[in-house]
Image (cartoon, rainbow, N blue to C red; front, side):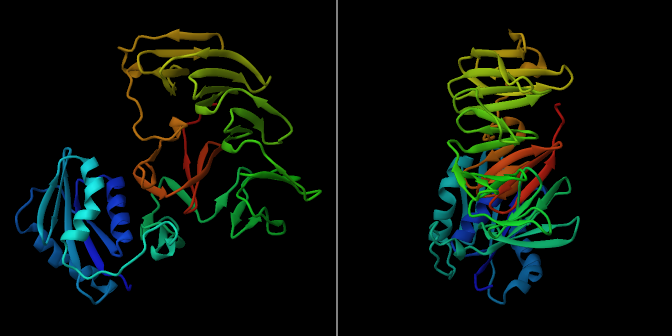
Length: 383
């Protein structure tokens, strides 16, 4: 509450852009309150009227003067209105690069000084996550965003959830009420006799740590994919080198489809642990899955291919499904629909945090482990 308050009135602003505004203003020392305006036409006095009516509602935050700004998006153009006037940004890129500089140089408002460097994260207020389904509030790490509201289609756990369903918080892995372990590295899987972390495998019988040659990047039910293109199962008793560093992948009916950074594509039968197809596809981008046709599609810049255990077939891209609509800012694997905007990670417009540590699928639920906590959302079952 020592921070000066600022009210941001937003119209037609995408959720990720709203988070960007909040984080930028928070880094400058403000406590931000976002107000979403309707889509009725602007009037010259609307901002002042809205500011007057809203300042009463938010005055409980502090007794000091409130600063008010307005941000409106029309097509690619963004209008920023302050007490210094209105400035027009011709593109979102211009807004992202020029917003904070304009605010800090043109507003006549006394604000606290902060060191916004990564070495001083505590100068951000801690983020509060509110889950309306349970009416619970969770105080998490400082991210620059004061409040995150959990949508009804997602679950939030204020801890790291591992592939086996254990919980990790404050350096303690909680397997059950009676079974707990001190772990100094991020745990990803508890097997009963070992713990897989992002750096090593801890043998619980001997206490010995075995450094792993490659970091696990994704878990899919009984299988784990590693950064060097290897795969294993959750027993950690076998490992198969499949490709170079993975770019995109899908698992459908015990078949793993993997595209690596050198544009090689592999199909692996996970039951037999054998590569049954390998090929190179120049300009390959990502996989897609057509549930109606039960077909895996490889999308490339110029061509699309249907993949199967028997090979690949070039397809006609004039059909609606096969037209290329390449993902924008989406992380690999593409099917997760998680996006990275450079200032945070998002799922369907929901801010997840500043860092993603691990993702895995368990029983049809995608788990996204971030610096804020673990987010869970159901996905379409593909096997």
